[in-house]
Length: 171
Length: 362
Image (cartoon, rainbow over all chains, first blue to last red; front, side, top):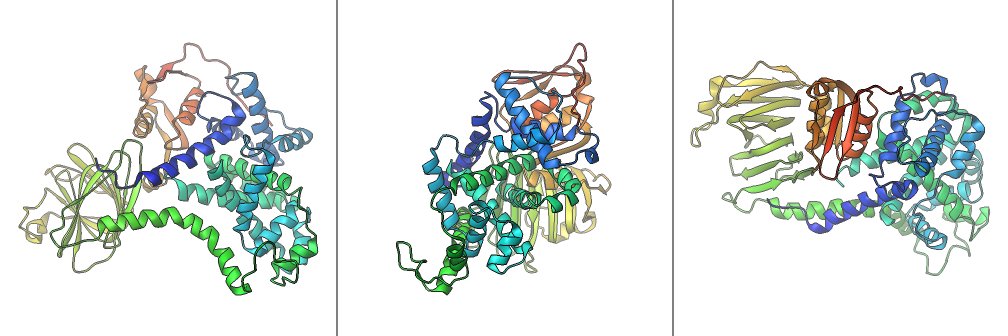
């Protein structure tokens, strides 16, 4: 069988895939495939019959994910425990979300993020810095840069998606 | 990883949702929509969690090297003043913005560019008598190629085709597997697909051909194709085909066995075709055995169904085709199913007594 795609590219794809898997594996310490975590969160989301009953889906997502992480560290198979949601708990869950590239020390991680940020356009990068360093609101960022709130959101989404893709590769 | 474009698109959506969700007012307006987006697939959940992790890293990582809002705003607006030159001479504003924009695109396009260059090198017709080109995918692999005429071919797992382009015909023979075609228009050369004794002549269209041992299943997404049962003699050209053509249009499918008469044209399930092309397996109320067989197509670990009656249990879901583990985890959530897993096989057995249902309340 011929292999028309050079090994180099195959390897690149493989690395990207495995680093993504590693992202979850580092959090679960489970011997099985790491994307189990996302899948399990998903399955629990699917089991919610009354979607409208969830006031804050994002908080719900993080609560499920955080509970799952706790369960995984306690027992290898404790799937399907019921999840109670209150807002205080989900706040905590979001704080708890582990960071990317857990093996890297903070300095190296910051350096890498800086490199990735350098690839953005100046305006896009400014939006990111104002949001995450100065913690300005979308409205405030827009006022400073003379752009609409919608554009601020567009820039931020662009930046996050870009960083997410690049960081997965760098792990 | 071959699902990249799909994953990238989901990452982009995840980022957009994340940004929306940080705005409390907007988030509450669209919470229902967000929930249904999240419930699309496990990949959506995964990407959302990844984007959230990135945001947290950005927040944590920006603690040092703090610059004033004025500096940041000035740099963004191109008014560089004395503060913009950090370490190296700043290029002119026009050039600079071009460079900034170009970098992320270059990074993304790099792999694709290399891929295209390598393939183009192989696929460009050198002479009319160029040897046939064999394209194939290994077990669990998917790939797409652009042929020299601009047509696209996408091979599913375990598939192989021979491409024979000449001055007056574009012929693709399917040796095995499943192939999606996106045919470029070329009035002077017909585009013909041969599979298991069946001939498909396409006219500027998109269609899918799945070859089984001695049969071919043809599903048309767009345009229309003429299907001929029984291959023509090599020298006969169109004359031999003439009367036996069955025309299949967009949204329709047909199954042809060897030289026998074709089954009637039926409505095609196009979501299944979209699914394999995007590296997903989507099933809605389909028998467990059938779905398990589909996952086995992408995995080295076979799924064995020990209790035949379980094979008929109807299940629904959407999974990444390579994500066998998630599918196995999903099977484990079905009440009557017990999954036994070893390094070399996955056994699906009937659970002797049904345990209490797993529920999530909120």
